[in-house]
Image 1 (cartoon, rainbow, N blue to C red):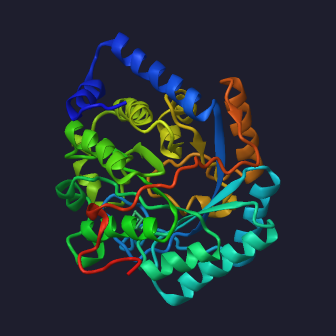
Image 2: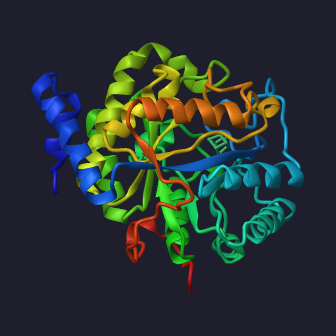
Length: 363
Ligand code: SF4
């Protein structure tokens, strides 16, 4: 269904309860008719919190000296991936702070190959390791990763620039260009934004949804912005909407996105759970169909906090698994065990918007 920017803004801010309920009901109906009523699980492995970037909202930004840095060894990553495989999760997501050095990029290639080999090609692999060159994305794709998550965080350049340092390491244009590289390299491309940022307007959020549609994203992960004390953006905490409002806006963004893009994968992100213990389940009832339970060793989870009060810190993967299963069962939500849960389209070529000036991915 086509929604205009004006329609989206109105549905994001309406206080008419009837209109709000119709939106959620329509979105859920759309999801069930196009994608079924199951959710797909992607076991999340937080490989390392070392990062070369300094995003102004992020708790693990390179200038935060209060964070204890860690890096999982290969054995731990492979064993967490195999736990997810045996648990029937179908896929894993390997997430890390951004690094471009060859030791890091080769390590990811090796890990992807190893996990594919041990699972006989059956475990799907999503990577979320930041901005890289086209050649590195291609190398990881050829090793066996088939989805990549790179959130644009805000598709409005002026807002993006307010939440990132003004230097060449944090270029809006390069981030957009990376989304083009990923498409050219043959990935299912995932992106997303934060909702409830200081300076953000409902019009910015409407533009984000229209941006996802324009670039033909395959997967979207959107979560409420959660402030972190050890970041520069915390100075604007008094401008923020109450957390309950940020949660509500996120649920409505998910519902609107499902109506705009009925076939894509939409994640119910962990940040929702920080505001409401049943936040992810509510997102599923509003149109989301992917959940990423944390598989990371419980002793390391506390150090990967982009925002504060991350849930499940100290919990091991087995407990995360059983809590999630019982919450989903209580809401009558089924799980697509051992399925990748991709939808089958040829995707769309990256448009001009997703091009780094002077660089062409597949040239
Ligand atoms: S948001 Fe990502 S790229 Fe930015 S500092 Fe945090 S981990 Fe690094």
